[in-house]
Image 1 (cartoon, rainbow, N blue to C red):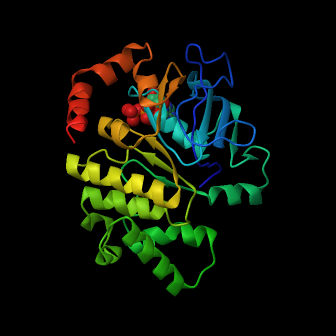
Image 2: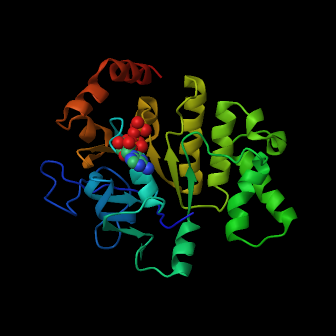
Image 3: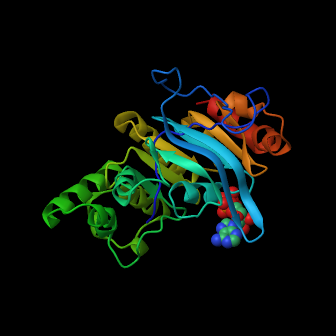
Length: 294
Ligand SMILES: Nc1ncnc2c1ncn2[C@@H]1O[C@H](COP(=O)(O)OP(=O)(O)OP(=O)(O)O)[C@@H](O)[C@H]1O
């Protein structure tokens, strides 16, 4: 797997009144400032441009991801959320812009520096992307084999620890992906994402395909990991429950860039037809009503 990674995610963008042009920041209510009075950005992307053929999907996109937050990335279908995630982790080439991860400019980093950065993040792909011919335990050990040189007994212990950490029973470790439920697959994929004790995890629609109870359990797990491990989470999601319950900030993608980023209220009140429908439509009202009854 290639290049980038980072920890907390704050998005700089061009919301009204937030400043102008590249680097202008939408400041949400996220955590911690550094000594200079700015938040500690684990990922700092500037002018990111990505395209296929003649079409750019992302154009001049700026974003900062801040340490220790869960950032929910939303946007209409096809706006480029997964492309953005893949670009940040180095799986998708850029046509322009820079990405700084944990203080390292990815483009000018040496192979060793990039490797060090890569070890600091994990990814949960949409659908889990587990290797079907490997057991859960072996899947969790894939990043360990790639990046570490450990005795196999120690790798077994570490994998068992990760499997327990995501709430799977110990015997799940010896099962193959085809023997797991959808929720178990997500947890197993999360265990793999946590294999190297990352500072940051990228999650691509982690609750898609789960029933509401399974999704809520998964949300709880993510917020527990953030609180106990200090994880930073970059989460592409369509799930309103997740946005309302666990996201510290939200970034809305549209028009090839981050339209707005900030706390829920900031994003919900941004004047854009898709945001209006998404956050104030029938489903959003039902979700918000459900949350307020809890
Ligand atoms: N490898 C590729 N080659 C050509 N076009 C691609 C490729 N990958 C993505 N795209 C295009 O880029 C656009 C953004 O895709 P992406 O998967 O990032 O959307 P998304 O916002 O994650 O959508 P969804 O919410 O439906 O998953 C789409 O128009 C898609 O067709």
